[in-house]
Length: 442
Image (cartoon, rainbow, N blue to C red; front, top):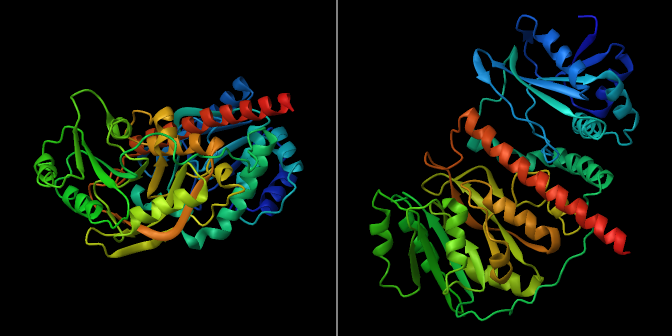
């Protein structure tokens, strides 16, 4: 088709993107990012051009087939800042937008050139998702969803992540969403708490693992009062019997939820608003365990010395029997005090285990969702408060068939990504407004 020139990109470098721009001489420039064959359905390319014409989009992309299987994608929004956002293999840019975006490129990226292009183009015009199946491709990444989610923290990808962070930071500054490293102070002794800390374990139907989690939490050594709050959301598999077997220990607080909808976020809210919740609420998922008996003490010590409203530790990926699995320790060493809360808008998580300063958490609350509730709260906390980090492994994250992120369907994975992009969109809007308000007051 004369109005579209098709290019296959292999390296995603700035050099290759600029070379394409130099050759682009048609109305639209189509970049294909897969190494496999691209084949359009009948009149599929014509349909993309038609929609691009009708919407005046800066870029269009479409649902497609991976081999013969449907591969729907999701709508792009302002918070779709993930460098791994899945457009499919086809991105068709309006050539005038493409060239304008490339002309503004002031960094020479080895890995983030295509990402830089996308961010710049998104500031010029809209990205339109055509929810029609218009072409065939073969995605070479066939790994399970529970494996792929660790790519951005794999130490082997560190050089890539540094470039992606640089490109994203420049974009946030351009749209007025970048936050300076200025934080509100925390008064750690605010409020009247009987307990210094509470380990919070939300659960539902975890009869195989809940005992290990509770045992791990109750085995902690501390020179202060702490307890363990287990919130069961209507388990039917014997989980409740396991929980009750620990009740002779007065440090265990058991909350049985009613039949209404709670999800993980609602279970956390039940725990933090319980009168026996401690000053610091510390995460322990119902299928994981702490790495040793000092985790709770290390959390509290970090809160007391770092002047922060949230502390995030590091964890080790293991199998069910606690044997380490690749990529091993996930420590988020990409985090910096200067730019961590900005880069957090690019990645899909803050790490684990997480600890929260309860006086603030009781004001913010968790969203009542099954996924992304912790990310939403962490972003909101980071908007104004410092987040402390502990880089030694404190937690064993067990990978097994019942993990909530294991073997997700494309529809479920899309729904999760759409929600996190929406969280980022809301947070971007709030940060832009915060910066505008600060400028107006200056």
